Length: 360
Ligand code: PHE
Image (cartoon, rainbow, N blue to C red; front, side, top):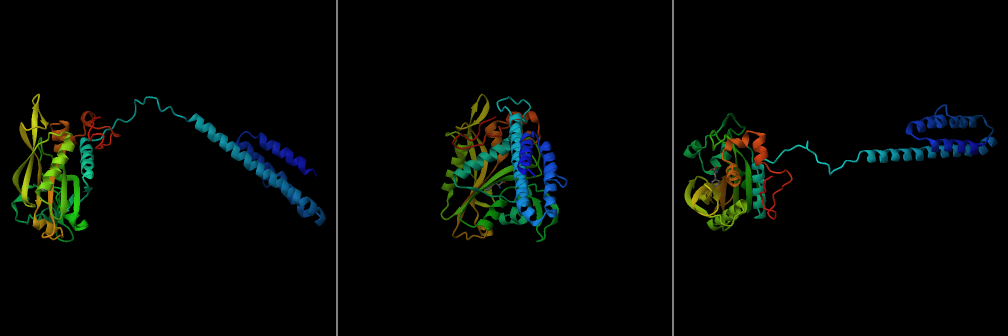
């Protein structure tokens, strides 16, 4: 039998196959159970040993040649199919896309990113704590024992049930409990900011039951009020992007700081609008002070060794002052007109070198 002619014929049919389906039917015709080459292999059983010795290798070589040709052709056809698909699926990226989603970054998210960027530059890490807090972290450890009048001033949302340790549970009324958590978890020295949501039962044009604060805490040896003032001044100048930001520190009272300092920032009137910078008038922006010894001790540190300063401020208020909104409630209404007006371009990531806040 002329195996060479059989192979030639098979190979030319394989080479001529234009699609995978034709190729598969050729494979079945040659190598399938009823296939011609499979038939040849079966004849080996009926041959004399001498015949088999001369025919066997030829038949096997034929099968191998055809098998390889099928595999090569298959790879070539698949490759061509992929090329054709890639060519067909090209998209013109320069085409305008009027239907593209027009989401924007909320001013609060933008402001928080700006704050994290500014404080990271001063060596602060971001710390977090739970919004569902217990009264020990939120009050007691911050030098507000159960009978303390400041507790009542916070308009706290309480949960009906206590936790496993018997502590009363609440929605945190400020980010200050993160001070305690950070000290207990990380020890000293410590340099953190803690931005996040806080809750108080209060609602009007300047108060919403949920709002945002950012806490700052520095604990180290030899920390004094000068460090606090420099840090706040540097932060506020970077945030408002003005060198003429003037601070006024006023003595105040917080249970968790001693002494306590309320910080006002000066504004000027431009066309009847308040603009940060100068000192025509004053606006309160921050609560702060040197961390109370009792708070340092509650954080598991020795107040004879470590000192620190802390500050807390409203993120929503900072955003309003910088970007000129006047009703806090609009922040949480989800009105697309407000969002597209005050929102920020999603790809506009704040950097200190590029300026922290470019509106969309
Ligand atoms: N936790 C205070 C508040 O919510 C702010 C504050 C933080 C004051 C840290 C002093 C130090 O009003």
